[in-house]
Length: 176
Image (cartoon, helix red, strand yellow):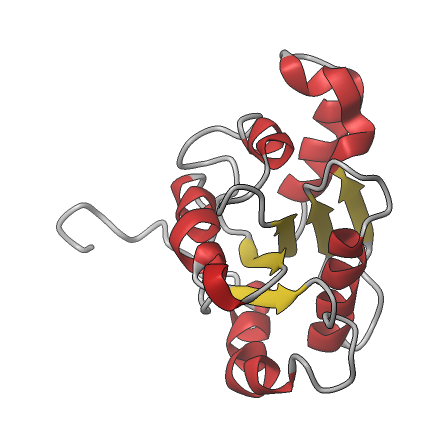
């Protein structure tokens, strides 16, 4: 299983990136295979055809499991993450990829942001999001046990979805 973390924080090497790596490791027991620190793509995100952006998109598209992380900015995910996600085709850009929406914030007021704001975008791009989005305190994301309840509830579901390769060619409009 190929695991990639994506961090949409305007600061390079951020706590958001670190949290995504922690979640990838907690889910799989190993380090992520790849990481996309979106801020490093710079101005290439503002248009189409930038080679570094195309490479980052290809990295994500060839993954089985992607942890998509953002800090909470103005009660939602960051604009820089939105610019990156805009590089994927609607409905097919993340087709067949299991994604975990992860957001960090200063307090519990925005705890539903990953579920209400980030997850729908990932699903719109075709990702499979089989679990509840994960929200962590930006001050305690790396503390022992902070993700235990979420992991106990959802890890098996995430891993089962990411490792499954269902043959959907037999489905038709009537069959859905």
